[in-house]
Image (tube, rainbow, N blue to C red; front, side, top):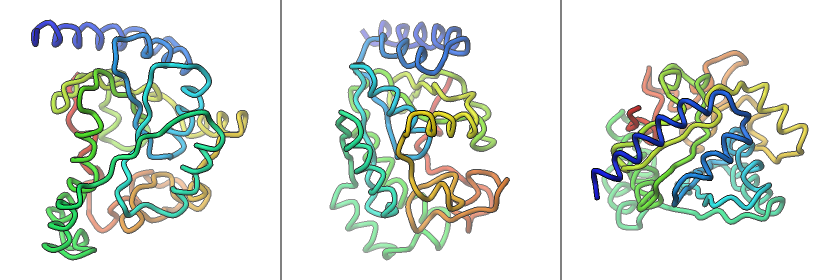
Length: 242
């Protein structure tokens, strides 16, 4: 059975990588939605995810939405979360850190220990994001994300679809070739609610203590974990293989 499922994943990745580049974003979502489920979409309520949420909400696609509430999000993120639920007929499941894991983390390194070094920061990300993600993706066959190639150097290496070995599923990036300008065209045309911080110099928005505004034209991810020299990922999107 395992070999059959693995071949199904390989076949699906091949089909998606072949077809998605030629389709509109709406058609990409429709194609992915026709795959065997369960299918989920992870949103952090950034502009990419808001555009995909709008598209998914327009039809009754068998796609579940979820988010990771780390406990350290910006108030503006909670505001756009609430506006999204008000505007669209959707349900967004929330996954949070386990209480015992959080207690252990804070006991060992304090509330802001992530500033002390990469290991401490990765431990925080693991507790608040990686472990909850594993719970959210349990039993899932297809995971849709809002990743774009223009977001940073690492993401230029992404493909339209790949096999995420860690979670044993197919991961799909329907916005892979989208530009920021195209996203704002969607937002303006369809009155999509967006995080206020995007207009205050925050192209990428994560946890409040770990994100700051950046000058216009800067690397979109440079405001994340700014005290580190080069590592600009938390680990959520470093386990896929095409």
